[in-house]
Amino acid sequence: MRSYRLWSVFSNIFVLSGVLLSFSVWAVVNVDKTRVVFNQSDLTQSINVINSGQNETFLQLWTDDGDLTLSPDASITPVIVIPPVVKMYPGEMRSLRLMLTSRQALPADKESLYWLNIYQIPALKKELNAAARKVVLPLRIRMKIFIRPAGLNAPQTTDPEKLRFAARGDKITLTNPTPWFMSMTVNPKGQQSIKDIILAPYSDLQIESRTTLKSGDSVNYAVINDQGIPVNYTTTFQ
Image (cartoon, rainbow, N blue to C red; front, side, top):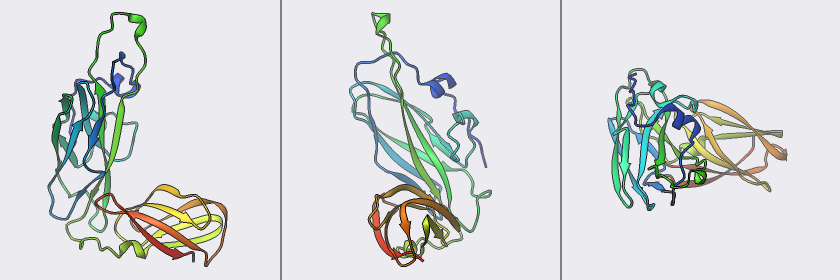
């Protein structure tokens, strides 16, 4: 894999602490996707970002392997973002390119998962009154990046139906026999949804239920597809 060192206008102090001068209106950056998918032959993907706020803002962009504590220049992944630093004016839309530098170190039998960080810092505005300074937490958006091996067939719409669910007491075991990551929500009968589950390929994951469950009970679940849309399914606990 290739590392990509970000030469940024932001110091690690900004990245870790988020202590800034106050500003009049918080800028908000919106993204046109909820995930980035590199299919078998893809080398590049793009996302569009728009500054829907009323102030200028800076974006720092980098990828990581799931470790939130790493600074941008210490994170090593096979995906780089161009440009890594962007200044955006109010109402401006920019297209950013993600490049896959290599597949050699990635598993050939299953999908890989990385994360795109979009770190937003508003342009600093000097205050006449130093007492007006305050702490502002910059906005950090994280998006999943899925990389699919060149040798595998494309995912099928029926793959989420292969997931298995087992219940024993207040424990639910999820089994994923497919080579794809499953981003999902589980809705056991009569309970609140269990959200933000990421089930890795060829793996089991145990989650806790609020009530006692047994084999034969029904369970609804939703799996997020490539377009970021949840698709609903129903099965029973084994």
